[in-house]
Amino acid sequence: MNVGTERLVIEGPAGAIEVARDVPSGGAQGVALIAHPHPLFGGTLDNKVVQTVARAAVQKGWTAIRFNFRGVQGSAGTYDEGRGELADWQAVMQAFAPTGPLCVAGFSFGAFVSCGALAALAAQGRDVQHAVLVGTATTRFPVEAVPERWRERTLVVHGESDDTVPLSDVMNWARPQSLPVTVVPAVAHFFHGQLPLLKALVARHLEAPRAAHVG
Image 1: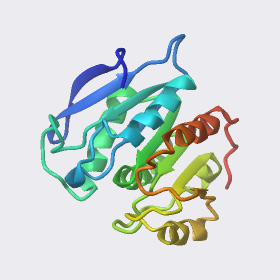
Image 2: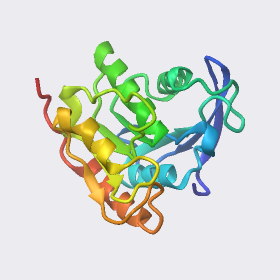
Image 3: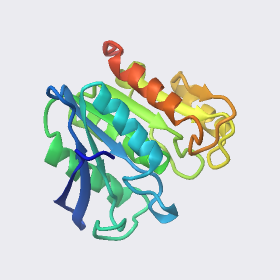
Image 4: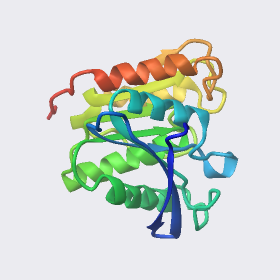
């Protein structure tokens, strides 16, 4: 992402997991774990949307952790339809954010995995300061609902003209949760031409006061 990006390898449930870490100057207030899009369709930790979310996190004082799911580039293993990828996510969390303030973020398939992670964290009693879900892959996967306690801490962003995940599908997922969706007009799945706006939306969300638990 920048000259200061640290490339690391940790051990995961399927073997090696490639990780990229960016640390803000002046110390970090927590860790943002950012999950990439579909491994079988070119998704990697270097995806531009993932990098944009990471830049916003670093700008607002969070250490940004991006990682490659199993079977992607140098990460060991093979695609597992979200099950093994959630285990990868949990291994990364244990390595870099076993305690302390946590932001959970993901793009497309990564948002699907992130929602599974949120459900698991809620069951474990771990707190989450912020969640960021971009282009959530509700068309292709059974995306978990955001735990009620964190809905006011969650930013859902979607392109009006998304041709991979129709906006109507995301609205159908969000509606029963009364979960607001921020719609970027005339933008497709990868936010071409609107990455600066996406960064600004994420940065604004991360600087907002943390909402109190609901329920």
